[in-house]
Image (cartoon, rainbow, N blue to C red):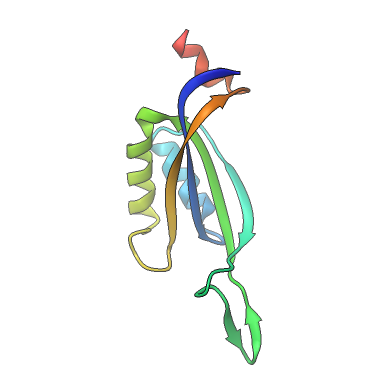
Length: 110
């Protein structure tokens, strides 16, 4: 593994909105990502319908990018997915210390 200057952008949106997030991120410079299906469990996530608890389904989009791409991609996703509106989802980034398996992204650094 090689130390690199990467971040992992994590976006959590309601089920069915992952494609919008991924298309927007690619248009802003991301090369791809991973979509996971999940369900919410927060205090505002469970609603009742005829006495039956309904937990909203979620999509989690994981996108590994170079640190310098983070702001542009996060801004584009926030705007296009309307994450500034309540209940639309959230986006955040975490630093990545080590990475392997993304040779196509590291070739340009040599």
